[in-house]
Structures are given as C-alpha cells and as structure tokens.
Amino acid sequence: MAKIVSVIGNVGVGKTTLTKVLADHFGWINCSEQHAERPFQEKFTRDRRYAVANQVDYLLLRAEQERDVRSGNIVGIFDGGLDMDMYVFSQLFLRRGYLDQEEFGLLQRLYNFIRGVQPGPDVVIHLSADSAVTRQRYLARQRLNIAQIDDMDLINLLLENFVSQIRTDFVIKFDGTNSSKGFPEIVRALENQKGLL
Image 1 (cartoon, rainbow, N blue to C red):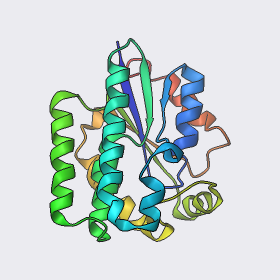
Image 2 (image 1 turned 135 degrees about the vertical axis):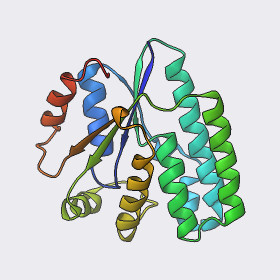
Image 3 (image 1 turned 90 degrees about the horizontal axis):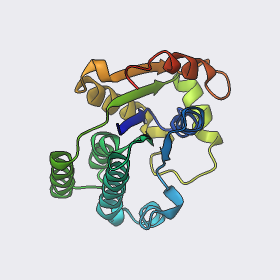
Image 4 (image 1 turned 60 degrees about the vertical axis):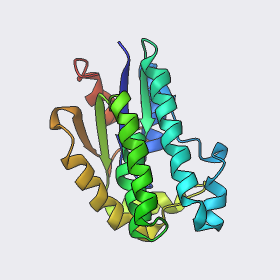
C-alpha cells in the first residue's frame, strides 16, 4: 500500500539530510524539493513579484509527487511537502509582505482543491533542534535559501500552529539537537514503528 511520509521542521534543522538517510535505509522514494530545478526559485530571490508563481510551482510539484507515489505500492518520503509549503512557507511570505491577501487566497484555493482530491500524508515526522544548532546548520548550507535566518522564530511558530492541527497519532516528534551524523537514533526509533510506517 502506498504511503506518504512528510519530514517537517525549520530551515537548517536537517530535513533534507534525514529524508535522504531514511529513503536510503528503508528503500523509500525520496521526494525532494528540487530547488535548483524550480523555474521561479532563483527569480524570486531577486524579485519578490515572483512569490505567487514560485509557490504555485511548489504546490503543483508536491501534488504531482504525491500523485506519483499514491499510484504505486511504494512509500515516498518528502522533505517538507505540500502541507508545509502551504501552512508554513506561504504563511511566512504573506507575513513578510511577499504575498498580498488575494495572492495568498489564490494559493489557499489551489491547496484546498488539491487536498480535496488527494489525501494528506500518512505520517508526519516533526524534526526540531536547539535554535543555536539550527542556525549553525543553516549557515553551513550550500544552497539557495528563500527563508532567511531571521525567519526562524516565525517559522517555528507557524510549524507549531500547523502541527497542532494534525491528528497526533500521525505525528512523530524528534529532537535532532544532539543527533549523530546520519541520525542513527531516529533510524532506530522508526524501525520500531513498523505498524505506522
């Protein structure tokens, strides 16, 4: 049976690394954000008028990835995912003034339409870490970042609001502050969650 696992957390917390580790370990399909391939990502960093196009592109990418996973007998693991793109990043861009209320409403309509025809994730892994650790990891990243280091506190707030709306039996929380490289503690914990995964 096809399943979708979504790894959520702040920028720099280790979502991409954990997603890759779990995909490799369990043989799941890694559904990454594909920042370098996104046509509006680079444009958005230079011109905030591309905010709507960038978010529409991400929502559609995530919906297409979910559709592909659901069409097979596989588990797909998502770095962030459709729901995080809507409830965290679109909200962040609204609050930062990159989107106006009408543009945000358009994204909400698109998201509601997608969720009306495609179910949400089966499992959400909420990865957190101490803010100093997250900031250090963020600064060490070698990739394009739309969310800035100053956004981390607001992202944490948006994440908590988002997680509070999810049925708790679908959420697995991990503090990755002291995790070893490759998150072996999380891998072991998930090996014991066979029924859920």
